[in-house]
Length: 224
Image (cartoon, rainbow, N blue to C red; front, side, top):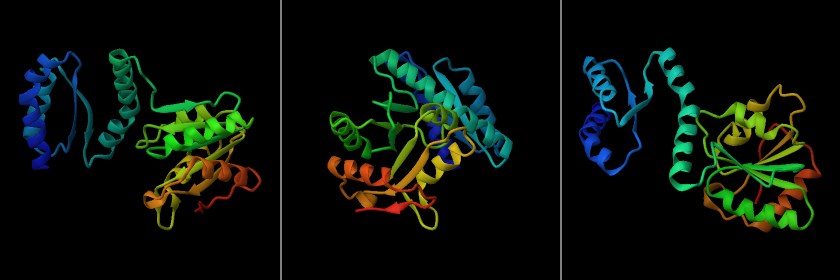
């Protein structure tokens, strides 16, 4: 708590310098509301034009839920601002060659670059495959995922994150997010590249062919 408060207070002192360097607002999140002086910091932040409070975490579950509910909106605001400054904007999800796709690869992080190459190769071979890249994971953008995968018959999740006793983290989260969705896609979960092991574009194409011929199970499957 002391480190967090020290960081927030120190950052507040630097706001005038930041304001001179850029016109966009400096965004803050504060953890813990159980000390009186935190409220004073909140008041100070509110009086500085170049700051924006985006989240508050607290043992009070109502405050925590309220803070979490704001995250997708704040992420989209940040993305719009980034797009205005750079001309590049992708949102919390990035759809790549998903139009008309019968199979969509879902993954995040460093796997996406290789998966994009695999999608290009499969499209050139006449296979209707696309890629869905998650840019926001916590909290999971459930409604955005449902909209992005509506009408897609099959999803193959490539997970580099493994939770013992649970399986691929993204696989299980996506299954829960799409549960009860009308005409929900079949979801295959593959644990590939765990521990940083390289997975080539060719290997991803092979995995897609294998999974399309098999059943989608509830458990994540380890692959080499």
